[in-house]
Image 1 (cartoon, rainbow, N blue to C red):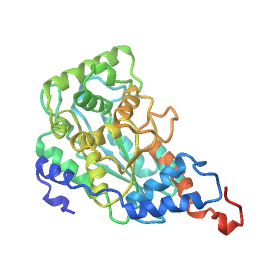
Image 2 (cartoon, rainbow, N blue to C red; image 1 turned 90 degrees about the vertical axis):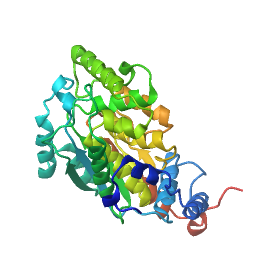
Image 3 (cartoon, helix red, strand yellow; image 1 turned 180 degrees about the horizontal axis):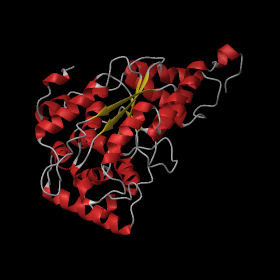
Image 4 (tube, rainbow, N blue to C red; image 1 turned 180 degrees about the vertical axis):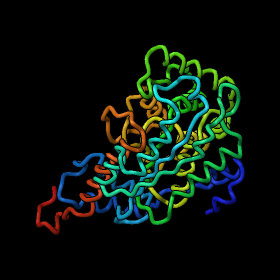
Length: 339
């Protein structure tokens, strides 16, 4: 694949999107051939069977494996935080990164429970993106640099990449991306985020609407520059890098899915290698998943971010793989198959 050091422009990203690899049909066929032989009625494990097929198809091998699972949290700060759209100050982003590094956050505990490696990448936290109600949040070069940073974390040899984010006020750019890409009213895509009251929520809706009006574009990548953020651009880069290296991806909540959606809007099918770990209580997330045609694996009323919901869903992925690879066949178990 093209080295991330040579990604200098949005045009370079479009070139990569135009040449995305598809699923491995040989591995897919091998998975489909084994499934009916296992000691269970056909289809009786439901979506667990679909997960096994997804892993085989996008890892490009059968049986698939989960020997190295990587959770990646990207952190960024946002100029619109100064407009009072969050219940927390922007300083919390830096403080939470330190908490991740000390092992004290929810994601640390979840990763430890499921044997997931965790990495955190802080993206220029001392320099928030620009206030996107006044113009683009990021220049093209800033956006491309963040995408390249995300691509770099999709390491060869990773069996599953779990993506998440940390950034005070980042549900505001997530809502702005969705509003810019899919229209409707700004309020349709804007939720309570960290738990803001009605007054702050209304201000947040106004900021989303104003930002989209100031940075309207028919180009999804320009939308990312205009109303996104560094951690969102890095998530998009990680999704792209994972596709190029045939790594299946688990997306987290609203912010993470909105960031990845930019790729799908630019190149339909760009998220085919992605599963969505859970649906957030942010109302825009459910609406976005319906647009994408993706069903979340879990619905747990979570809205924390930091890859927490996707990491919990790893338990389902591990169970799916264990059943597909570990169950006996009818012949091995001496169990009669259906006539």
